[in-house]
Picture 1 (cartoon, rainbow, N blue to C red):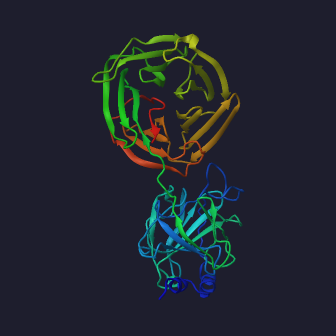
Picture 2 (spheres, helix red, strand yellow):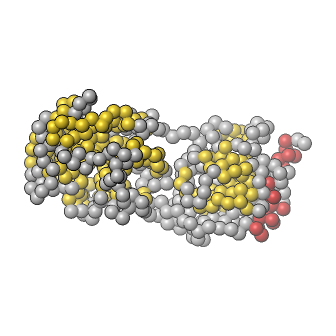
Picture 3 (cartoon, one colour):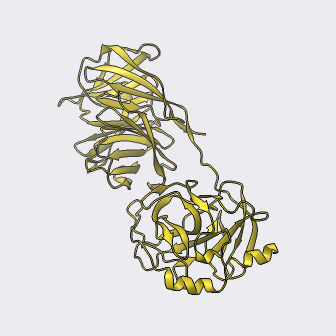
Length: 449
């Protein structure tokens, strides 16, 4: 049988009729990104072809535009069992075996947009799983009656026009719309084919660098630990000082490799600078330098770009620090950013980018522009309440410290997009041993390769 004839055997006019009667199963698990409901008018997700980088595939509408059937180029060899990956970040809202469609998956990408995959040989994700672009979600197959025994991927992009939290699929009149991959739109009309479409679903930049983390033990000794940003493995320390601070610290911020700021517990709000002499085989530091009073902050964080942030009684303030070893005169521009910042933890994800958790488990990010001017994004609704410290050395790398002594590692593929759909857990740095009462990461020690 010729290639053309073989392809045309995939989908016949019975497909639409069969699926119209049978594709009625929907799930209403909605996925909200940064507080935006799926019913809001938002841009379609930036999709890439759902196959590994560099592979070439043929896309064909046959008789069911704007849906697409996909087979691997140049001769369909390798279509069955081909790796299927997510074309964009999102959350799986359907994953089950359907009588006619076979193994199927639907992913909610936020903003009311959904992608659907039919006839799969296997499914690698379950309902509720969060995926990033490039996450393996299954294998291409020929499962289900309407596959006609021919391996291919039936793909649809849907828009939730009725606002029910899902998108209907598989039949004429459903909520499917024309998809675009790498900025090119497909599915304009029936019986159109696009040959040798190359996947640009390529790996995103990965974090790298030596992350520097300072800490304070309950007895007042300092600690230093280095972590490989790429692997999450601890590569140095913890090195513990012999000397003690001589006071009980309340909040901590790392300015640079050998400079730390600390506030002292108490009503005076004493601010100290600690200069580290060495953190190699031993940790040694100069006696703390008292900079001034009135810094009653119980949260401190430095953004690595000249701004120190502090929270006291829910009020967020920003200061400018222009030198590596500041004295009081170098801490200027005391700016009242806003109130209501009742955060349990505070760190910075980049210049004027804050990240924190609340007592009820929300993970929040902020873009600070100036006095009374900021944007708030809710990355997670729950489950982050157990962390006593949140650290970020930049590049979307986050560490959550559990009071039992574990340090958990996360990566946000785009820490500035205000969305949590590309935030994934990457296991633990250590399951135990992190017994510090305060922790702070040096900003900018993680970068993207």
